[in-house]
Length: 389
Image (cartoon, rainbow, N blue to C red; front, side, top):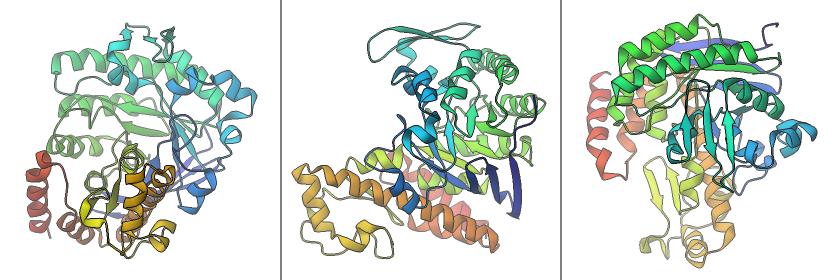
């Protein structure tokens, strides 16, 4: 099988932060990049033309969910995901490995694969590495993922077993791939244990994947543990391949991960919190349901160029959410997705100009995390960032 037609070019580096681009059959992904999640071939409340206008350069769809409904063979029959959902740009599908973690109560795992009980009708479905590649090739995304075991990140004894299985599955996925127009990424696992992460990165590097993901983070460890893990993992990964941190999308985590050498991200966070009335701003989340915004004539974010900020007041948006209007969910999603695409553009520009360290320090100083549990960690990061200037 010929090597897939994918190229990764780095144009600028500042410390470990990298500015590059990844060429795919459906266009170039400027990196660092963030992918909104379209689980069922749709980013909730948005149309493909919205995603283009919001300058999204990559979206993610979920292999497990699309396999169950409408079925990968139907998607293939109708021309693959790009044709099916009318999205012209680069696309990524995961493998179902995260569902091994999130649907632990609905699955049984053995050496050969994972048996899932459908959350829709209880029917049973067996995912092997070969089956996953068959499904992902039918779906037709530009970037596809190996089947891995996303395990609890703090249990070293079990993690060693899961890691060995993940490596065996990666070899089987590599052998099963038939299409040459899809970039199959390996997934580095190992929990919070530096030696296991390095071991995983080295093993997978020998398989020469077009790109590499970091899986199994943001699933129970603290932020400081996640950052420490990235400190050890990124240098062990190939420098000439893109690095993708799976399932991480909090703005402060993206800035910190880019600082440590990550190039790609995806997460449901911006779209999910939008449906609950939370808007992302440079100063943290704004909960539009709060009474203080009932008469507020200002936009969500003064300098934001999205349609929502150019058009509506906080008072009007609060009214829509309080009244249960469907348009509120769409408006919140438009702003949050645009916030993320602008954040990535700002990060790329800062790296190009050699000013990312300054950008990071200022961003962390301004951005307030609403979760009390992590505020102490954020304050410590601010101190560390300022001390490193």
